[in-house]
Length: 404
Image 1 (tube, rainbow, N blue to C red):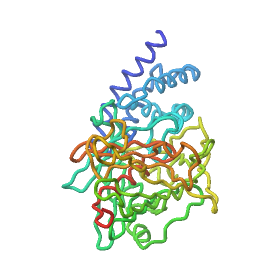
Image 2: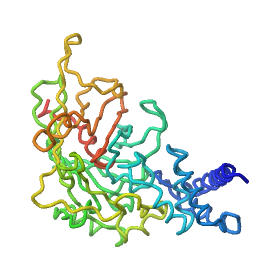
Image 3: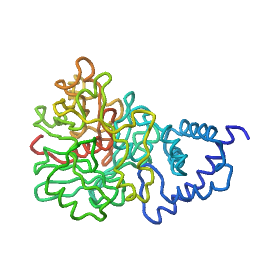
Image 4: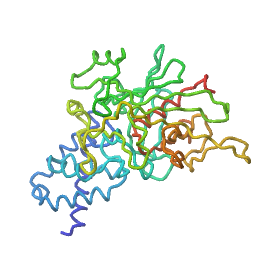
């Protein structure tokens, strides 16, 4: 059997088992984050026992898995890469070495990828679907060049109004967005006027991160479903909206202080903290997502760096629009990714006060814009993660009378 035929045989077998496993897992509970269900992984193990795959030489096995990872660059075919990591300890070890973090590869593979900085050399093109009836929002990554397609589900958020504030609870599970869920990964909280927001990560963004001492954080601990689920409120970003001097014709003025990212991250050779795994005591809380500890040993797989106390934090601000003489309006160049004019549309760049001098401030780190009644594009890059980008975009949905 040729090497190419060997790889194709593996793909065919994985495809059949993965589809069967996913159907079985959906009957138990629907979880659509990156990865496949536990039953799919179990099916792979059972099917491979007693076959040629179980006795495959390590060198040849590595070559096969490397080829699978290189060829399957986009979803849905990339599910084969995740399936390989769920077969056994040896296969997972190889995939941990092969699969690189999004910063270097530009790919989202395992659930932990959503907490890691985006690519440095390109942007990840995503889109958000809004459901006005249920007050929910769903983040997908595009699988074609279209502005929006079927997409690969990444994250979900649910809006919860309180008397003095509003929370957006963010989860890996589109079917369970409660704070007590094992798939809850963070939240966005606004003040009464909807002009100031704080993004909280449910897991430490770096070693030594300080958890919020708010009353809500203590209440989560009391209401936990399982003691294995961490109940952290780690502030990672503060977002503020200011008075728009251009009126309703221009975008809102945004200011984002990234508490967990140093300003040097956008400089040449700069580094942003990278979460490499979810907390150890949280592994068993994800029965349907068995690959949360998968990480890349290919690139700095050590613990996230601890930002110095006196180190300047990265500050993002919205890019100033330019006056278009022919259209007689303020415009931003979204490069075809935004088709509907809206006050919600924005582009975030590094602030002049914290970013390096020169043209670096022209590099758009996060772009958000409307393409339909309840459809929006979201493109992001290094040094922020999909989770942080999604939370920032959620802050733009509320009407802000004080800013318009």
